[in-house]
Length: 496
Image (tube, rainbow, N blue to C red; front, side, top):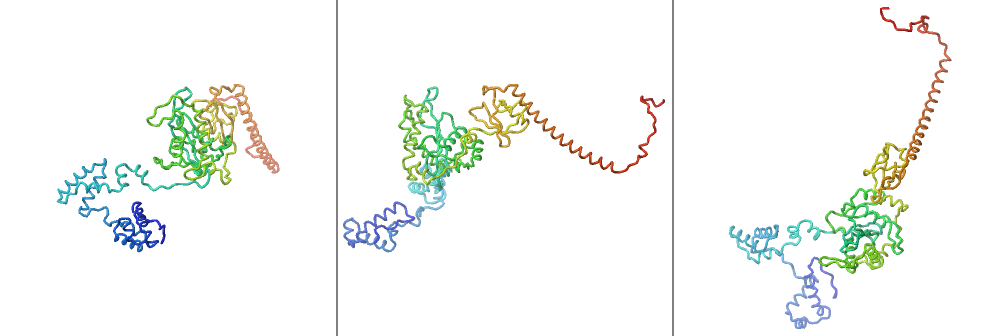
């Protein structure tokens, strides 16, 4: 006899436990031949009950020991179906009514129609028997229903740097800002989906923005200076929410330049970012609660606070020495070890300067004017611009430093144009005159070369026709023979 029967399918947990309990009670008789009378006496059960259980087990197996579900379960035989539907409809209205309210209205309806009036407890049983998903959808709306009852697809990355997730959170921690005033910092984290390792993070008092995200992405992509932090490279997919910094044109252009797919989670559905939300909760439970200035709801702020740099040092030590080295609850492998396993070679940009150009500068189109390039009410100059007067160029600028811009023409770098008011430098008149004269001389040389080409072609053309005219004998025409009469030099009147 099998001591470990196969688990039941399609049976509730309660009935499964009941069937297993009955099986273990019968096991001495089934396996060792102990008389049922002895078992009945020992467990204080009727002998007929044990005999019936034994027969059900032999005919149907473990399923026979589970209680059979009534075919009319959920219905009330003494109650009209229309009245039951009316009870359920009133109970599912918004706002949720009380059982007494539903009973009063249904009783009045039954008396009016001449039907049997249901009791209070009958109405109570019908309301409590409603499907929880139906009640949630009716009383709390689609969003709550989706978060609670929708079937989920749990996406999993296939290898390191396949998918990176990014998000921000306002920490429950007070630290000192530059003015020595308490303030709560923002934490931005980029997490590798496959290994759960942290690729990059940033802490700032400024609200999330495209440039803050670019700074953290720069740290995540490039090689780390810390020896025990190997996570780097360009991800195949960058998975974010619908924040304005993630949906900006700058990040969209960065994703194109880096050949990185930009994917957004479903709007209003935080469950799609569960892995990084779980990391934030880990930070809260294992790091912040032990630091001065931790202020969960209802807790007063302390007097001894960390600086932003001090907190960042604590956070980096926690990530590298604790979080990366402990086996993860999902993968059962330390995040850093899972990322580095298998000899993975990350895809990196050619240089840090190229990465900075893509991430930390924003591309805009501008036209070169006679007095420079205008951008955000500022004027940028460089002698190289004299050769591109009136043409459209692409400028890249760092939002944190508008003193200079980088100018490109047809994907070719031209120069670094400066704003004299911000850069503290000036383009002298002599430099402008030199650039202007150089440009004018280059144009004149080009024009002279073109003219010489045209003159050479015309000269050859004239020489060809002249040689043809000399080879043919010609006679003077009658029109060419004119009398040698000298015309008057002064104009005379008609009457003269």
